Length: 42
Image 1 (spheres, helix red, strand yellow):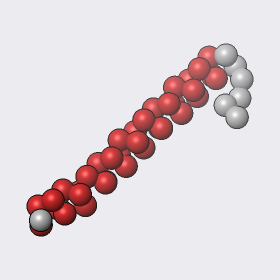
Image 2 (spheres, rainbow, N blue to C red):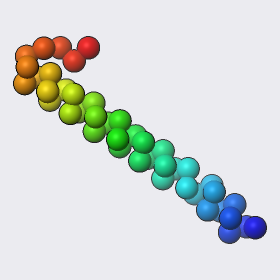
Image 3 (tube, helix red, strand yellow):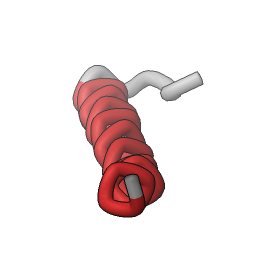
């Protein structure tokens, strides 16, 4: 039971980091495209 709880607690930071990476990558990609088209990001 302790091993399962440890895995459950440790997996959330990894998942959060993965989601944050995907969001940051998408924003940077949109920013580059906006600069290329000479328009604002927002």
